[in-house]
Image (cartoon, helix red, strand yellow):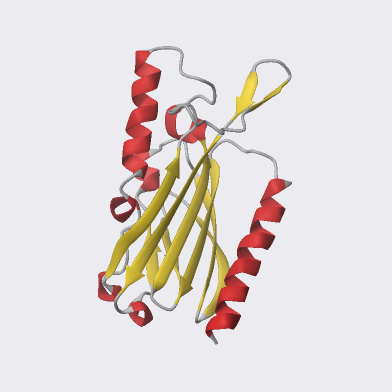
Length: 177
């Protein structure tokens, strides 16, 4: 069973990533992939930098640098960004956050279209260990409260109860399975 779930999780993320690679970059829209494999819950999110800070280029002043730093700090708290069903007793184990233009190892993959327009995405992943994963029935997100320019997350999930997709919005920020 575990090998099948691991394979299905890898397949879901591979298909989602391949499909998203050809999907147009749309301001205000992001993606969330969720996988529950035994006690391990993995969340991976990708949102346009514009949805968080209002621009997708290197910062031009201290205010913009501060906005990028604040975004990185906010995303570094996976437990606050994704409040989980308390009954599942989940705790953050690992997280990786990449906010473009915040470090010397930038791999922001921004590219120009028609002159000055750039596209850059925030990528973050969080791994939680859940003491009672069978009791995990939902994942909430507070991301819409912080990023007012984000209006939709296309969420995909896979776990012991199957797989599915759901659109999350500021009025409907809970992924349920």
